[in-house]
Image 1 (cartoon, helix red, strand yellow):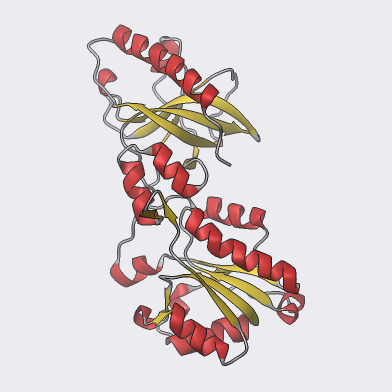
Image 2 (cartoon, rainbow, N blue to C red):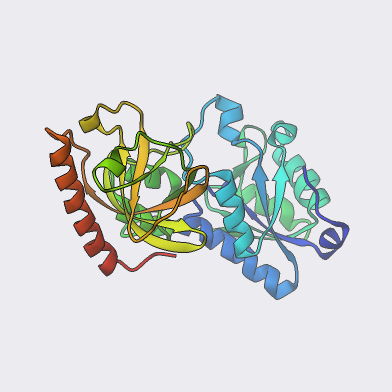
Length: 306
């Protein structure tokens, strides 16, 4: 575990507890509470990041990720958090009492904790928000539990967002995320078919443990060196050209440059249509031209979620 500096530890921390996959609007409520308290009391706003998802170690499997660990780390740092790396294997057998004593109090000198209503911790997940409040309260540490955050009558959760992304409900997923769903992946060489039909694309392959959006065409945006470009993205296997490997293929408007070997972030804005097998490459070309026109209309009228 990467410990705090001596100065940070002496100052004390306001810790936001959670896995924060996707950093959706429910997570942000937990995070903002720790940030505001830290600012008010001059503490170090802190988040612990596990080196492995707890469910992966306990059950051997885990739900597909909504964002990479690097994306999560950078987003938390931009919010103002001190990110502490946490070796989950070393603590998996700690009781809830040992977790609060050895990790929160001894390692982090915690003065304030915020967590979600459904937060669990300690061996077997026996600890919860109430036991945390009870044990830390005895030490004079305030614990704030954030209730369920709802949007249009539905509880916001990473599970629900995964479902929406898998069903092509990009706009609903983005509303729950509070930002546009994105992936930051290496650009690799494709087969060059896009160049031959006048719509060059970048090819990206989803990591094995990452959520795969519903196959089809999306209005999208691409961030290149800090600047956003409108684009159209196809997620799928490209059946018209005999494709079999899953990929994200994006045609970027008003951009010229070589992106091979670079990590580029693609934001999915709106699902336009299902992936189809066309009767010819010419038919595919016409469909892409229609997709590009629709994308430009969507992006012109769609205010970007930060």
